Image (cartoon, rainbow, N blue to C red; front, side):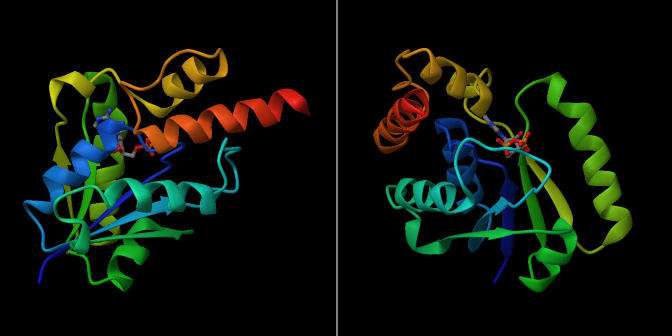
Length: 166
Ligand code: ADP
């Protein structure tokens, strides 16, 4: 049974992330999507909100029963080892992703030789997409329905309404 983890910030999850998860389910038996708890970052959505959104969204995928959603703090390779994962999944959109991802993958390999980083390319429709652009469009009331599932779009709207009231 081959387990892979897919770590990220997912603030919030987009169709690009879901495309990568879907592709990963065709290569591995079990996928653990895991939200990184990073005390240095100030995300828009709490960890619990992000985990909730991911769970709801992956439920729509064909392989939903083989996908788990969690959160973690600390070194990704330690987390991967604790889950007996053989791979860390990362998405590669453009050359701009490459340098950082290459560095991370090599550091993680130094830390744990047995865990491979596997890069997957999303459908070309999603190569321009990232969470921060989605947050920005939503902040100014733009339509994000091509970028995120309906549940995420409505929670983004709610979040910015709340923020504007404060
Ligand atoms: P970061 O790690 O920069 O905070 P995220 O947490 O949002 O980015 O993303 C987690 C992983 O998903 C990263 O490997 C990232 O490259 C990938 N990813 C993000 N958006 C997309 C997309 N639109 N298509 C494919 N991969 C993506």
